Image 1 (cartoon, rainbow, N blue to C red):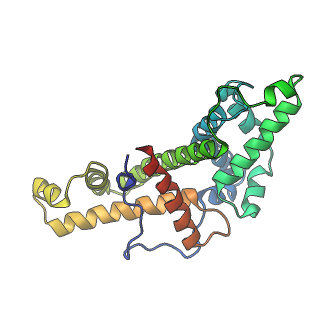
Image 2 (cartoon, rainbow, N blue to C red):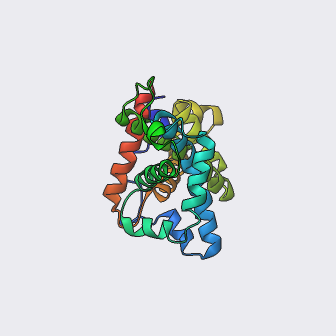
Length: 237
């Protein structure tokens, strides 16, 4: 799938984002235990599959089932009250924070096993480099977060009476329908349809920024993070 099919993520002059974006996770962490539980659910939903992709391509893959090892990682790390609090002070994107934590967890698991030396050796049939495995992880993060942002934005749009705006934007950016054709089909002015699509698109970009940003990140750094992730999607073809 082409990067442009991932819904035109570049900002426009009509966007109105704060200079210091607020992380959705940080917002949840400020809500006490209930917010922490919601933040943990978000982390598991957004990063479980990417971590499994990383594990299955790594030299650790013979150690356990991917589902088992990733679930164990989340159970261990997210049960620590300070795990996400430390992320808040790390000034690192969540994907890097989790990947480093996952590597440490895998090494800890190896150290607890009696066959450490045997298990720690790369598999004989493994041809995937460490860089390639990491690239697959980041690509899956991008796919997952774009899907999450799309689901959340659709819910927000329909809640706010902007369901038609969302449908137009999806038909245009994801399905490739020209706005002039959509306007003709709807019997509406092209300019109005364009504004409706832009309204939904701005909400999508805002949602994606909230999911991706981290404490201390500037708008420019978040834009760079989005660009890096979306660029990885161009390698799907």
